Amino acid sequence: MADTRVNWQETPAAVWRRHRSGLRAIRRLDPVRWDDLTGIDRQKRALARNTERFLAGEPSNNALLWGSRGTGKSSLIKALLNRYRDQGLRMIEVDKDDLVNLPEIVDDICDLPFRFVIFCDDLSFDVGESGYKALKSVLEGSLELPPENVRVYATSNRRHLMPEFMSDNLKSEVRDGELHPAEAIEEQVSLADRFGLQLSFYPFSQDVYLQAVDALFPQVADRQQLHIEAVRFATGKGVRNGRTAQQFFREFAGDPGFS
Image: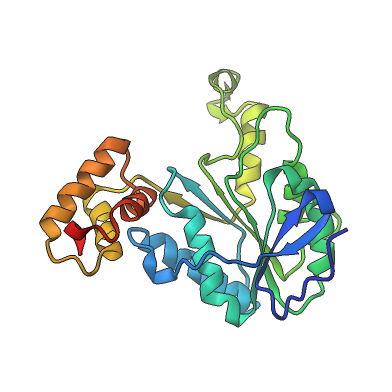
């Protein structure tokens, strides 16, 4: 059973710990701020609107943030908690391997006077895994409706959360002019379909990447040299995204050349 000793009046977030079969209050929250995140304004607006509707008791959706690595999916959800915690938002992080415990976790919080987001980071399933079945029941309910004070926000590099194989497509059929997907494809798509809000994230263009760098180095006067070094750094890593900008900052923050 979940640990009912968590004081949600003072605790904005907790994480499920398998070895203790309960929740542990998160002591050191990531301080990332909403305004720190650049290049994803469309996704920020959509997630904020959905969350504000949820907090107001209006119809709202579970959310899936999917797409390229390092583009701000997880950071956006962390910043969401920092932005709305004073409005009653609470968050519980559950690892993919612990989703079998999700119904019990939800049972313990469904009657509390807070609005809970279940956060599943880097969510995906391989062939033979069954944890997604418990997730399905929380997303849309079974005989019992899902609780009104719980939503699931997940991030993934996979759009459909399940592995996709060419052989699955080959089993699809065309009957009377209509395409009938193979059963494997139906299974792959059915889980993601339960997330009413799906937000896509793509690699940054160079301009967006440099905007993220500029936001991290507001005091630097020589923008041209900063950009040259930032582009060189991203080229060495082979990817431009928010994570690369953060790593560039960690390496060069305080450097005499960027003061």
